[in-house]
Length: 626
View 1 (cartoon, helix red, strand yellow):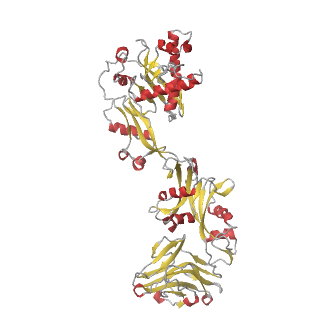
View 2 (tube, rainbow, N blue to C red):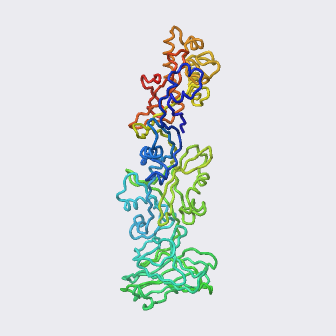
View 3 (cartoon, rainbow, N blue to C red):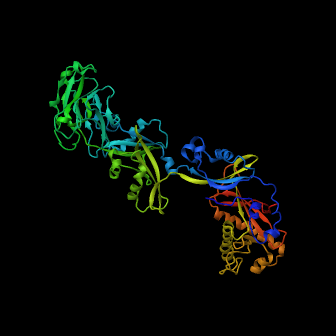
């Protein structure tokens, strides 16, 4: 943060007790009429008084510039301030994202549907998964799903994977339902299905990135529940119905499977139901914990040829009488063939649209979390995602610490992960930076601090990026000492040592004390620019050989202009040009020649031409008129 004394030279020097000021600097007794000129520096925190995004975000940005808000705030906070008032204000600013994060910030999320896999397997084959040989053909699905994608679009794909499984040759099912579209929690309705329950509720659950529907009387009294498929017309004698099932804490047979051709979709009591439970293999284990999903087999529907049928899952239990088995149902299918249950695992891949099509993103600084990564973190592994209650920033720093070997200070990694926002899964990307100082990875908030100057003129507050650096000629001013010593050090390193090949201070322009020099006259001891010609000759006569007093004085002025640009560059490396505004740095110094002719405060003006680069403004080295 810049901390300059932004007082006018007259005010600053009036408060200084240097031994030559009162005798030689004219105009210090006449300050004119008192005015309400306010000056200072502070950190802006009054976000609540602003409007729009800054009020909510508590920072400014490229979109919401400080210059659009702070002048109005200053007018309200300092209504009596006179022209000439100025403040340097430091505030929080949100930078633009890094190049890497900006490119991969907006990521679409796409989870493959059963129909998508057919684009890869081909007609006549069924398998809701990819294997080792087909995973590289994901681009075919993206070409169909994102026909209007533009170059640079990025999609996070999620799909089922089994390395060795081979798709089953079979006709397409006429109906299939996997419950993936449901939101987890109690279920009272499913589109086109009949759902009813007493004593408890059907529930949509998710485990291992797979959704299913569940019922249990555990902890309840008497329960009865019905889950009935939509109407399916049987037009082929070979049609069957099948489903997958998983058992939890079996203690009684509570589930039955029924079929009807006269159910009206509303009143189960008026329909004729045929119990077909015995045709399925529904496990009676485990008695503790949960098993795994297995195929319950199938039932041939040839007797219903030409009719519409409904298949019902009926649960009857009583938790108080140890009839509370948990049943999990998934993948209900009507078709000529019932797909063999294949154990798959979720897998993710990041794809980017390029001029050559969809390509997998393989960037060393982009890390896409895998299901195994979520599992290793603990709670995130329950559903393979983060959420408001499982924030990513609490887990990713440790993940990176364990994953990245020998990181360097400032290293950036872009973390791509799934996030549940309360209603759906989305894909987020966050930039994380490594600090060797703290030996930690932290989320890049892009919040930095910026400091700007605001000046009141013509009755209005205006943004003014220019800076006035007042260097009062006194031994006690820290800023003056810093600038004068920096100038002295520059002369020693660049003139005495490099140009003159001097090896000992005192043998060149820099005195043996090391805190002043007579190349420019800068003195960190006295806090002024000592341009006494006699002292300059005495210190380094060879540098001024053949010159009269006026020539020596002029030469030292030239040197001061040269060296002060270097000092500004060293001490103000963060100075940058601003489009449409001339950024000026004005340096005010006390010149001492030992006479009354030139002894007064002078100013030198420099223009910022590039980051940390200063160019002297021609003819700006002038005494300040009183």
